[in-house]
Amino acid sequence: FFVAAAGGAVVYRTDGTPAGTVALPGLLTSGTTVAWAQTPTRLLLFLGNNLYAIDGLNAPELLRTGLPTQPAPASLGNLVLFRGLDPATGVELWRTDGTAPGTFLVRDTRPGAANGLGTGNEPDWKMQARPGQLLFVVDDGLGEEVWRTDGTAAGTALVTNIAPGPASALISLGPTTADGRVLFAATSPTTGRDLWSTDGTNTQLLVDDVMG
Image (cartoon, rainbow, N blue to C red):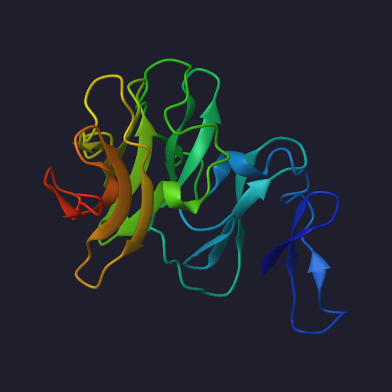
């Protein structure tokens, strides 16, 4: 399964032959609506026996379809976390277990209609999974900072405010290290832009103040 440009982003499946390479109707058919429900890793995410993707035919909605078991590298347990747009809350973090009742807003990180998670068009480095957690970038109206979530409202919170006040830390999340820490670039008013790491707790370590 892969995404290709054909009058907009379209989901295809293939068995490795031209005849066996076909588009899946109703998935990602409009290039203007693809981004609203990006998963932490890709526009497509496998979880258990399901493929999750976006319905771009009628509206930017999250769909699932039963498929053979595939790995789900960015899920939390049996949950898929994604950016979702609701006019009342803007673009925020949503969760789903593959059912309608199990699909809902995790937390309105920037209360009101303003977007807490950008416009929904952000690349993968705005989200990064680690064991039992998802780290993601939030702008709560006072600039971008790193937040964490376990998929619940109570378990969703700011990790550490690197640039207090109206300044923005301008976070770019990187890979997860062997010990489960996530590396990221951040801008501090005292040290400038440098490499940091976090284990998802309220303690973050400045890895190297490169410029001194």
